[in-house]
Length: 74
Image (cartoon, rainbow, N blue to C red; front, side, top):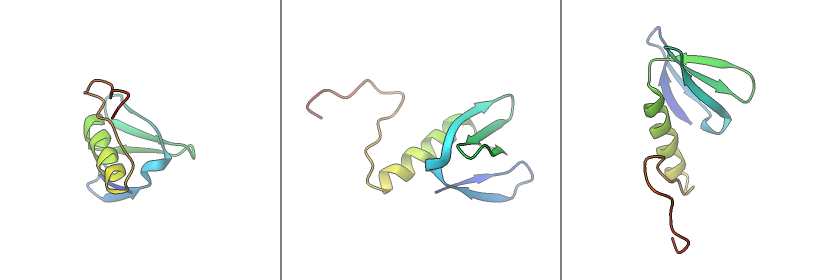
């Protein structure tokens, strides 16, 4: 679960596993696998970081999108 902020400043917690994609047109819109769309104040990069942090806390190995691919031995 990650916490995000709606445009009206209310907090919302969403299931990070249900995020299908995130786009900025110009506001950030999170599209869920359920078909629901949520407009939030956070940037795409903030959403990526929050999802990665959540997955790391859950014990799921996450590679940063800004790093080079991990080698075979890692």
